[in-house]
Length: 396
Image 1 (spheres, rainbow, N blue to C red):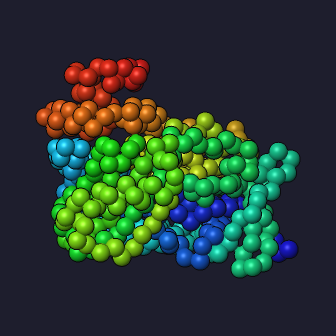
Image 2: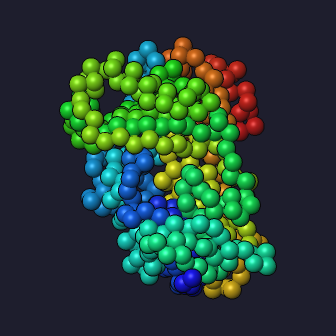
């Protein structure tokens, strides 16, 4: 079996994996980034909505190759058709740009490569190597041949279906109410307003929402996420989306030119994301926003910390869980409180009736919020519907 050596092995070349590899390489580590597919970013499994404001925090340059459309904001529709318009600055992590996700992922991999990271495509990791209480690398299959990769640190960035954490003994299991089943069409020839990303709430998408993210004046991603516990069978999520489309003349007239399906976690954060010689990041670490189901921004923010700490660990020659706590503490300081609050909010939202959604949107659309986030919305709702936010009192 062929053997190769590196300081840091990053498993998965999605956004979190590439940003981790980029920052670890910039810090001077010998980095190997492996991807099981033959093309980074493909197939796309994403609604492709993205906020623009966090990009500077991570150092990601805006690139017209991956920006399909820039929107003014979001429109949230209640079951009865009430509309709440929000400007893009306050609309959250899924609004600002509608992107070409395959090109975005490739651009991040280019940043990693330019910083010195090696990239191996069509490399499927089959298991991790453990020795003396540490993760010491991985066994993989590359272009049909078995491969042993010796590494001082392994970063699991292998997405929602992550196996790296599970192999290391970290509990990444999910309950059905912490999973959304999703399907999306790219549709052309439809009526859409390219100025807005649209969200539809209520029984049209139990435990989730329907989205219309415009690529241009007549093409958009039209998708749905439904809480897995609300489905009787996996194919039912498609029926929900198709029924909704049939009721929208401006969308029904369009043609489907692409379809993707998958699942996302909408869970609270993992209790543990590091071990001796190991870090988990992005979807593999359950960093997806439980309200929106979006994970790119959170994953990239955490990945910057992950890569920097990996570089520090290599320089110090210390790959212990104790040293890697710098990453654990760093990403939690950035994300954990919001993640946990949004998970609690999600737990309440999935129980609400269409009438309550109508009442809430009417209330919120008439309320001036200093800044739009779950905390401020809960405070606003508490004035009129204290029973809805009773479970959140410790966070308000």
